[in-house]
Length: 321
Image (cartoon, rainbow, N blue to C red; front, side):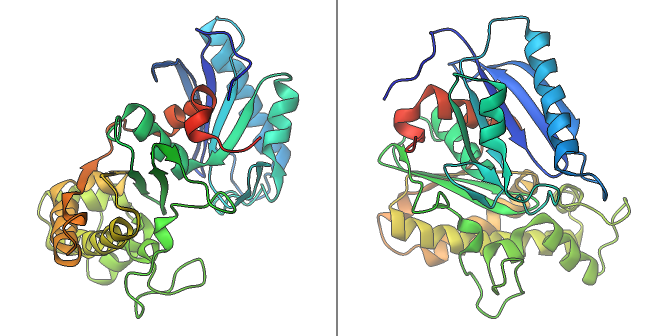
C-alpha cells in the first residue's frame, strides 16, 4: 500500500478529547515538531460548529507556526463511538458531536491528502507499537487508563480493527460479574472499576478527602504514592481488575507486551504492584507468564504519534480505504 506523500513532509496529527483539542506536526521518526492545544468548547449551549471552528483555528495555527510545507496527510484520534472507517464521530464526552462527519470535513479542508480517523485509545496503542514500548514486538496491547479505559491490539505486527473498528476495547472485558454498573449498560466491566472518575467516587465513599473540590484520578494516584490508606486501597482495587483483564487478554491473544498509559497509570507501584500480583494469580499458562507489562513510553504525545502512524505506516495500521 502506498501514500501520496513526498518523503520528508510531516503529518498533521490531531487528538480530540472532552477537555482538550491537541494538534501537532509529527515527522516520520515520530518526533513532534510543532504542537498546540486549546480547551474543548464543551460547555452547555455550544454546538457542533463551535467545536469545528475551534479545531479549524487550532490546525491553522499549528501549520502556520511550523512555517513548513503542506502536511503529507491528516491522522486523527478521537473518542468513540464512531462509524469506522467513515469517521463520523459521536464521542460520549463531547455531546455537541453526534454523527459529526469529522473525516469528511477534514478531507474538505485538506483536499487531495489522505485523512484517517480512528479511536483515540487505538492511536495510543499504535504510537506505542510504532515508536514506544512495543517497538519491534509483533503482539502488543496498548491501554489507556484515564477518564475511561480503552485499548488497541496489534497482532502479527498489524493493527487488528475487528468488524467495526473496535477490536482491543479491553475496558469492557468483564472482571467482576457482580461488580458496579458500567456506562455501557453492563455490570462489572474493567472500565467501571478502574476508570479515574469511578475510582475517585469509590474512594470518596470510603472517606478519601481530596485537596481539590471533587478530586481527580491523578490526585488520587498522587495520594496513593504518598501512602494515603484509602487511595492505596483504591489503586489496589483498580490494579487487581487490570491484572485479571490482562490475564484474560493474554490467554486469548498470546501477547508479548502490554503498555499502559493514561493519568491513572501515573500512580506507579501502588497500581502496578497489585496489577502484577493479580496477573500472576490468574495467568497460569506458561506462554502467558512471559508477558511484559510496562508503563507506556511516549507519554502525552502517544495519541498524536499514533495518529501520524495511520498515515506513515498504513500497511500496518490502516486496513481500510
